[in-house]
Amino acid sequence: MNTSRYHRPAVGYPQSRFRAERGAPAHRSTVLVTGATGFVGGAVLAALGSRADLRPRALVRRPTPRLSAAGVDVVIGDLSAPGSLLAACAGVRTVIHAASYVGSDPHRCWTVNTHGTAALVRAAEEAGVERIVYVSTASVYGLGPHRALEPDAVRCRPNSAASASRLAAEHAVRAAGGCVLRPHLIYGPGDRWFVPGLVALVRQFGDWLDSDSPCLSTVSVAALARAAVALQDLPASELAPGAVLHVNHPVPARIRTMIETVSEGLGLSVRNGPTDLRLARAALVKRGGNPHHLDMLSRDHWYASTDVWRLTGADPGPWFPTGFAGCAAWYRRELVGS
Image 1 (cartoon, rainbow, N blue to C red):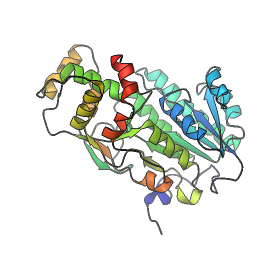
Image 2 (image 1 turned 180 degrees about the vertical axis):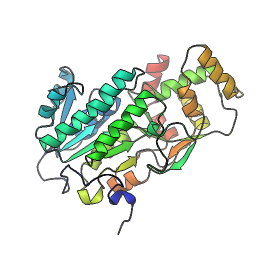
Image 3 (image 1 turned 135 degrees about the vertical axis):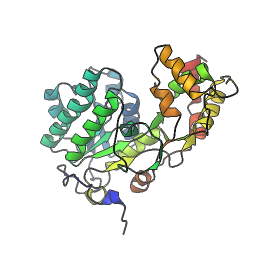
Image 4 (image 1 turned 60 degrees about the vertical axis):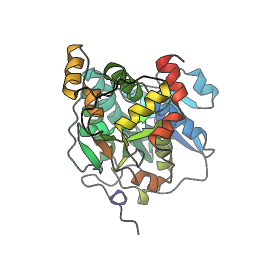
């Protein structure tokens, strides 16, 4: 018998108020995706498209002809307009909530991430949805170092409004018995944060590391989407109410390996010799930049991430150097114009 703690009720959370009591049904089930036009949500829709037994529905803020043309059931709504969410959830078996605001406006963070998620959970419960899967972030833990960290092994100490509001959103999902996914660094077509931020730092500071190269968890957006979709197949006996799962490649990568991989893939020249981290941070602040990205990439942030792949049977894909090679052409077009 498997004794993983993800098969036992999560401490502090009730039995699920959703009704996932079986495996995948024989008929086509409707899966609602929020954030469907975004980086993660778009990948989730693509993963759903490979499943003949699932009917994708997208919650979008405005008509999206390309999704309708692809056979996606498009519903107009907004997380900040709770009245639009009940109709979106009608007839839905699973909600994969991949919408989030990651900018710096605190009001929008709390409106979209926290209050919007709470409204979505209420609508899902009222509509009789069986399971909700929320794509959150490992950034809810705050700055590390984190090494082989298990879910909730340390107290979450988010250091930005975006992360704090997503942690609050997690509480709403978990309180209703839903499942939370915490990826760390997500890469692939559509990425506007991780690799672009890394490239900006490399161009500015070269190899800025002045200590042992830290290890970081990564996951391709396609692998993250596969895991999110596969979770809707699990019966309630296989997924505890309020479960939290790290969704990253099981093997972390060193940041120096990432710098070398990305620089080679994009044809960037890297200045030899490390820059003192304190000087690099001070230079960013002096120029009005945010040192958060530098801080996150300059210390260990890697998370125990085997349970989700074992539970779902989903493929985590290749390790970062190989995985990046598969999407380097997209990054070259976006970041270097070639």
